[in-house]
Amino acid sequence: ELRRLAERAAFLAGDVAMIGYVKDENEQRLRQNAAAPAAASAGAGDKAKLQLRPELSREVVDLLQFLLTEGLPEREDEARAETSAREIPASLQAIALLSLGKLCIRHRSHAARSMNVLVQMVLKGSNAATRSNALLILGDLCVRFTSLTD
Image (spheres, helix red, strand yellow):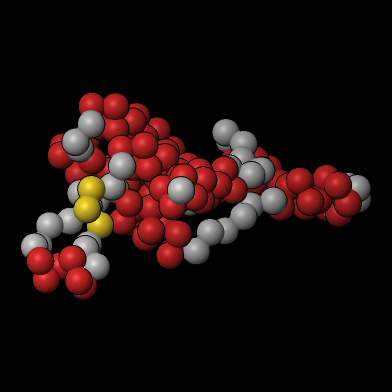
């Protein structure tokens, strides 16, 4: 039950990040700035559509990155018995990875902070599908933010 709630929350974070996203977002923003007087005469619906860019906090990004680690720390009573981490389910890691990718493609600052995590997923990921998805996300980030991958 708790795993399902965590999966839903991670999925929702990725979906919220994509609200209002268009492929050529940066180019469209430049055109909008150049045509600011024309936008002033546009209807209220057009203005809302142009400015829709939800911001998720850094804590959400940190949480998604944490879910990509090898395991969760034990509770204090379990830690005394033996020091081993509980494994994060592969399904939760997959959803967290995709949501993190959506956040990164939308915000350069999140992409810069997540590069190392994504590279580690490619190199040390426990699941072939997860490694493949991390590689695809890195490829998308290379196309969108070429200077980050230097």
